[in-house]
Length: 357
Image 1 (cartoon, rainbow, N blue to C red):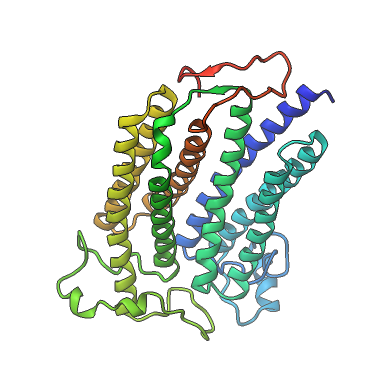
Image 2: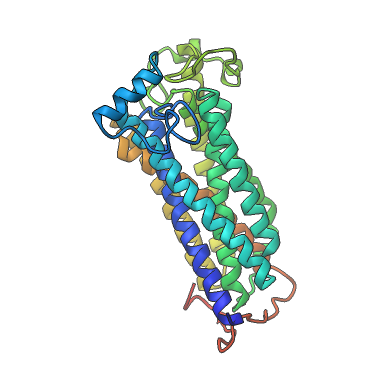
């Protein structure tokens, strides 16, 4: 295989991995929101088999082997669909890593992505074997978000390797601000995962905070309480006050995240000169507004399934775009943005002035 063909094949593998990671995140949210996380009580199979129960005789056979189990085939199907696509993603990432070794390019980042996939598999196993313990569930969600982000960062790096980037020296002073906003966003996403893992999403049905009298029952200490020692954590084990406090903190965090990220985008828009950066700023702003809208609709519509899944997916994309934004700030605010040799023949580098992205 020629160098050009190898690079094209690698780029397509990354595209497939990004697509699959989005599906895995969506299926993971769907599985969690349909209470199907324990649809298969074992791992990696389902009741000792590689497929979910499909027919009555299959269900009867499983019931004989697991007489105390409550078998819910639709939940088992949801869980196994998530595992199948996650397994396929793992295979694609493995092939990506092997190809990166062959073409001697992107080996470090591909190795990190492959390591994260292994960690995600372990977290997926522990999610089931530890009966949905919230800390592991939240870590599994965050791992999926980071996996998508790393894959997109790799894809952006591949694109930028064949192009000159329009310099943005005036944005360099905003890098500390951007990193601060990233930390706020990470904390907010973690709070969202903690809210979901503790089944606290529907505790407050009023807007903007909660029902009357919530101030007297709010407890900051209970937010970070780790519920341990339970046989199962499905449907939640924390008392109402703790769940309410988690939910309210998530809403307050959403307001802080929205204001800080919006302020960053407004300031960056003022100093940005290239069309590409301005488009990235607009895209981040659009995704931010979409995420806040979905969060508000979750409250008013009482957590409809489609809306709640979309809320998870948009959060993943918001984190991914924020990391791409910071990567672009670094790349475009160097003292001199030099041309990068294109590894694919017959494609000459060109200035990215916003005509293509």
